Length: 299
Image (tube, rainbow, N blue to C red; front, side, top):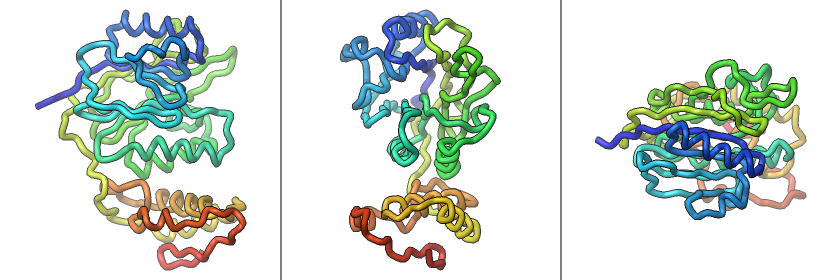
């Protein structure tokens, strides 16, 4: 039976030469198997051994023969390593984009989670007590909706901040995984190592992950709290001026995800959503949205 045993490390280099070189040296010294870098130095990752996203916001380097990559893909701000046993998604979401664009980038990242067990790691610039922040902001709430909908686990442990600037301490570098592979992830920690950047190294190990681990995307949801769904939609409608079709669609999907009582390996959209519906949506912003129905309620 094929199994994965690997040491992984993540660092945010903020494009700097010195921080990038220090990350590589630290990973080699600590016998890491995969090095993930957010905002890598672009000249350093021109080497074809580096796997990058389409914007060079993130990059990954396989350092040992312990890990075999059978495929990889990339989008804006994220990349996916396909291993025999699982997928690993590395991402970076800028703090300097407005909430609508932020949500679209998170959607693109989380839509990468298909049938296979998956680890997601990166600098997400969102706050939630789930990963040790003192409060939850809108971006953190958006992530939590996805995490709950996909039955994922937040792996951050301990009280050490992942980002330090003077007296400011933040917890913005986050690691998530689907539930089965979470049981194989150990020793998650913030390393006490000089990084030459305001971000700290994130380290964890994957031990004994099996090839057949799967989340079985496509199985039906066992229960949805429609009363909660209605309340969520009413609240969101009261708090937003959403008029465009895309905005209304995202609102309904978010309310639906929050209303799942028990999930049996579902997709990230309602069972009634499909590509044909998506194609028929009208993109024009000046069109009044049609009356929508969910759970027998008109919206």
